[in-house]
Image 1 (tube, rainbow, N blue to C red):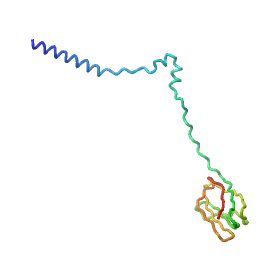
Image 2 (cartoon, one colour):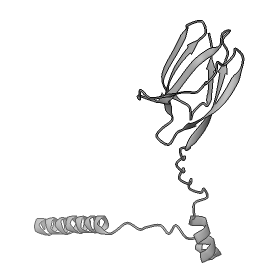
Image 3 (spheres, rainbow, N blue to C red):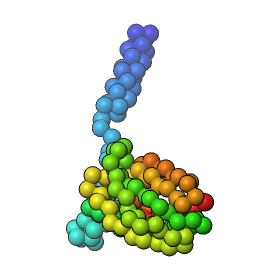
Length: 148
């Protein structure tokens, strides 16, 4: 009798393992996500799957101007006698005020910016004061105000 009980217990044990192992080996059921959407029609399903927002367009590179008009204003109490503007880092430059620029007056000049927008400035005033500035970007700001 004991042999039969062990045998029945072993069969039950093997049957339990095999059904548990089979349940683990079976692939999981995948839910049907289109259920309900597909009932309304294929076009409605495609429209529902499209994103609602549009992608941003790439930013265009800004073209560098070939020239810039520089407005020079003398805000000092004395006249500007010389003002030399040249490409940044170069020793060359040209005097952009051929005659003295009186106090409170302005003038405009055109600068070639094909090689860049940075310029070095050297200037002199009637009272023997001087001005020096290196690598000024006139494409970013085309106003030069000379102050005390």
